[in-house]
Length: 148
Image (cartoon, rainbow, N blue to C red; front, side):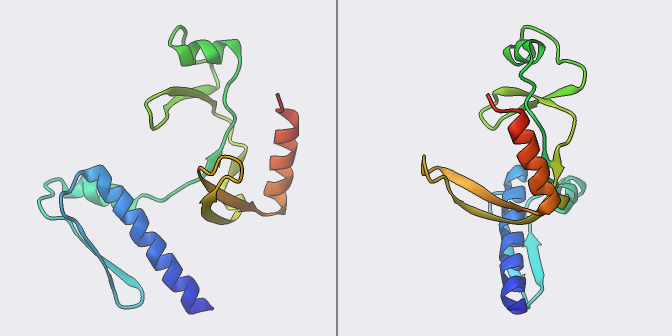
């Protein structure tokens, strides 16, 4: 079982590295497993090695926050007002702005597992998260307080 977990972790790390290398725009990167616990990455033509190391070495973090749905937040999202105090502006993948409160509700520390999957209703790709007891309570309470 431990070996299967190690193999799965190595495969996931290779996928993560591949996604991060896409940010660099490298035409033909080489990402290959070496032995049981090593990954070799070759980036032909990369000039800025410091930037490459920074992108590849980033620690993934997870933070769950609420969207700022206040009138001020909506105005900032529409581009007709400043971002409210206590919130920040992010761009979604489609470049659409979203205003998110700075207060962190949950972090990756509350996560016990995450798996790719599909939404049962829409059949769109989704990530299924499992939370520890504390994270589950927090998620339940925040959801209950923010319905509608």
